[in-house]
Length: 316
View: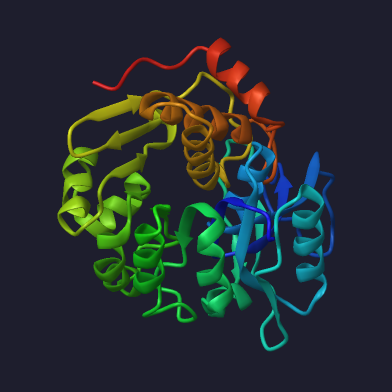
């Protein structure tokens, strides 16, 4: 019998190549010495799976990589962490989605991105079959051509089997906006950033924006507030978790890690407020280092960090 899955992530998987610090590009053919260059599996699905596995969940990934060295690195690192990659396809027609991130000394993170195989990965019968042994599904393929039109059926089936469904997106495009109309009625928790909410819901007010997404069908909304933490909006309550007082090093994967942290906390028995606090702590640990995991180690050390590290003042 196949092993149970705590979290199945579907969608974008990339290789992140992170360089820090980069104050400027070298002139001509000259070079610079930097403190760190890191390779990491990343993306709204790949990064979330990688972090959730590190936090102790039994995680699986539905996506695709190319038949190239980047794909070999991604698969090797995910396998090494224990992520189930049986649904991570190898697509010989596309390269692996890859991002180069020169992190500036102040934490800004411009990037060069090459689109690749993961946005064309379809949902197959293997993913539907896996729902029988899955507790949570994180849908991170909003607006992707490979899954377009199949996401609603997959999430509907997941909810019918009692699976908790969450949803995140990579960019607030027109395709994403259209796809959300069909997806949100089958989503227990939508997880946008405040910037994505501004583009998709037309407001800077996280509560108002959350209710607009809930009017489109989502049962709840977790809004990522960056340096102000996160806000959970449900039909009967609102919970804010303030950010921890840290010196951020690399915030590239903070959004994905916050999603993973919330799902991990909820799955391991924390209440709504506790899971949200744990999510913010997970993102903080990631922001304190370079790459998808940053300084993240495991569930217990993240819980200790959450309990011991001061937070900023509550939002007003």
